[in-house]
Image (tube, rainbow, N blue to C red; front, side):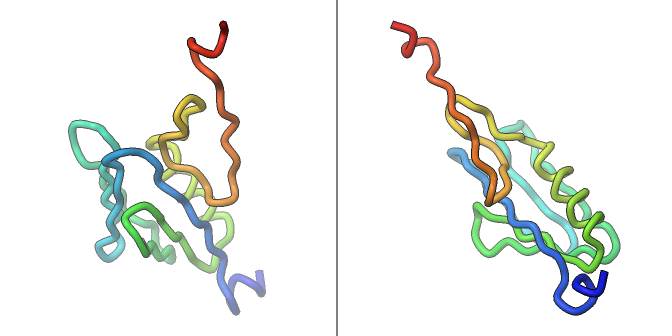
Amino acid sequence: MVTGVTEGFKKTLEVNGVGYRVQAQGSKLTMNLGFSHQVIMDAPEGIKVECPSANSIVISGADKQAVGQFAAQVREKRPPEPYKGKGIKYSDEHIRRKEGKAGKK
């Protein structure tokens, strides 16, 4: 808990996919994830959302549980898929890739 007050906790997410991009506007996170509409999420109280680039999200705050929970909710909107690796993943997460139909021969 002392670490949260002095340094803060942070989670970094990466967005992979053609046309997938994110923007932070104040406490709102706007995501274009290939749906017919934009996905807009409000950050909870005490959570700060930053987008250093169009393909990365940094979620930080003093409460470790709240930071992890909001990061999980963001990732839930488009989890990474195993064939092309498109979606939102944690920066330290490794996605197990599958071959597909052509790999069976």
